[in-house]
Length: 279
Image (cartoon, rainbow, N blue to C red):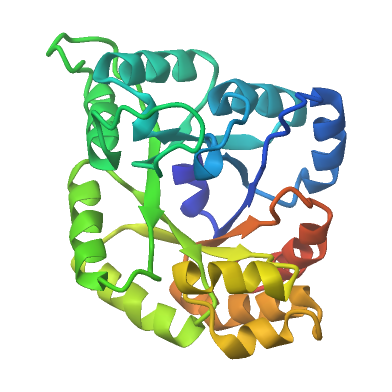
């Protein structure tokens, strides 16, 4: 369980963008080099509202075949209260010990429910830990390490702090952040977050962008400085991200590496981070 790993060291998690062709054997082969280097694999659920295989199903498959813990993402847009609670019972039966709960974007394909939000998902999971279902029936307690998201790039930071507080009250232990491109600003934000929510763990996102075109398209959403964008195609992006990791290391409990499906690009960065203090 991720909760136990935090007691020993800082962690590195790695995002998996599931293939729609469901080539399981090829995916497992691609991820073999990461065994022993990452502490867990994040499995997003239909990221950006586009069709991907079921995150929970693949979390189990990857965990069984690679021996690496997984963190399937549960997105509120997909669930009713009953269906989410049922998914959690199934997840525990499959050996999943970590979950990440978010509200989610409106889907590009299909329709959304939004009966629930991230806080409600966390609350349901927290109640199961206490041995209580949403129908107030007692069951054998089911424990998960409860993770969620935090976005330091939004214009309304006070609103984000308020949402983080609600998630914390509903059971969140670990906050995975959106990718960081302004480390100095991020450090001040995280100091404020920790002053409000004691004992939480913060895992900072680091993402590859690859091209200026992609970076410009994400500039406003991710708060990417113009100077950073202009250097992407001129400097090794591994070096840019490692510099950010070095600046953040003292203030976070780990890093969340995002390669947008180009897994081999993350190997060098992960190996460098592993050599840093407390990893």
